[in-house]
Length: 342
Ligand SMILES: Nc1ncnc2c1ncn2[C@@H]1O[C@H](COP(=O)(O)OP(=O)(O)O)[C@@H](O)[C@H]1O
Ligand code: SF4
Ligand SMILES: [Mg+2]
Image (cartoon, rainbow, N blue to C red):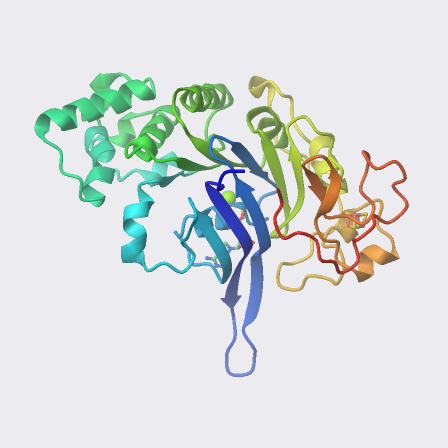
């Protein structure tokens, strides 16, 4: 097998808060022991409810935020502890598209300036003719009318701004694009157009996507493989089209949307109390919301383990494809499971 474009092992991010004269600082586990590989050309989805750690994972993976521990290998090189100076030339090869196109583009820049900014930041000097070619090429790539190049962001619609965000991210021809809920702040009809654009870009270029969304139906439609997060941990990894094995993913799917993006409703909350990331209970973090919870779930945290071909779940009693769901999955007690989710 070829070297994965991205290989993340045991990645953790904790936030400290509070603490004072009489109180100890508390630790919030936003991302806990996350491991996964992405092969070049793959589209991997990360899905979970708001607050489960998706954006933190994205930012830590791209070193926009420092990891607390763990390794991040990008094209074979461990970037987790690389000093910023050494990281800078690598940054052009991995880029991020943010959820909010309104705040991700400097309002004082014209679209032309915004599109040329990544070159300036990377110290790539372009002639006037090269600048014009670059702006024309990038605008065409994301199907934006070239007359908008001299406009400021506030003259553009949300969808147009997100196209600028995508063009900027692609300006330096990265190999990995991390998309953090790129359609979540857009109107439903515009969401479908942006998804179509991302699909067509994926076809034209050798791009690898890490696609983050709270929308399981969208992720199942768009991605080759799906990682489901719950309270900072990956609880299921499944190939496209697989039936979920983890009760949380099942619940997400049942409360999910119409596959037709124009018919979307917002997610229905899964019932039950969500524990705090500060004080996670022993055992499975989903126990208070899980209809299948048993004593074992309250005592022992389930590790990710195989439930099918390229399919893993962190559950003592995963749903089919295992036939007897009331028998604990073998090897779920504190285990030596393989650290990688693929
Ligand atoms: N800088 C921060 N300081 C403290 N807590 C944070 C910080 N950033 C995120 N969090 C917390 O980490 C959790 C995960 O946040 P986030 O990664 O934004 O989740 P998601 O993108 O899945 O909605 C949330 O509870 C959030 O409040
Ligand atoms: S380990 Fe137990 S509580 Fe957790 S998801 Fe599986 S069945 Fe539910
Ligand atoms: Mg987020």
